[in-house]
Image (cartoon, rainbow, N blue to C red; front, side, top):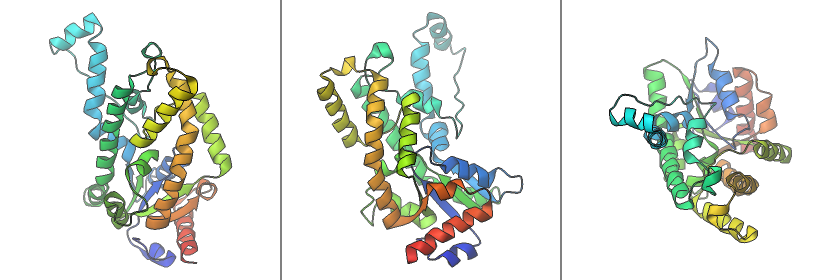
Length: 290
């Protein structure tokens, strides 16, 4: 790991951290807390923001153009190059990315054919891997351009889907661990239930490992005796969400065990300033050494 002990972490003149966990467990909250003060010395690198603005921007805009072409007036404007589209992506509001990913199922309910859904999932996978690989470059940019000493990488929940966390030579995890201390924010059973209840109220598109998606799609069709074109998109992703949490939990755990450390979500939720954050990370490093 980048910091071999709690004391090495405390003494490091430049602190580089990468947070990973399911969405909703405080990654962005902590990142913004460290970087929003006027005298802050931390750079916040949002992987989701990088995905939406750099690596999927063209896909998102092309999708908007396809929808616009269905409207005669907008089609005429587009064909004569009289309008253009842009997308505002924020690190706390990824609706443009989610809208592109979509949900599989009945087109009358806004669903996508499963083949198109899988194609968009592949786009997101490529974009997320590329954005994660940009981490080292942004560490340099943050220091060389803006003069920030410290760096925090705020990853998306699907980071665990594209790696082999049990492989000590996994190319992506190995590269990230060379540049950042990998920190898993581990939720409790109560956190998991809260995430499920929140998702049930407002289901959102997600990104899944291809093998996992193929399995749950086949199971859903079989269990409900339906064809793909008859699937209610929201019902499918609601049904899938709890399974996705269970699927990701051991992968996060292996990432922390083999490449980083674990911090309890309850401890991270109590962090309100830089000193407290440094303490929580130091305590987790000390606990790993015991």
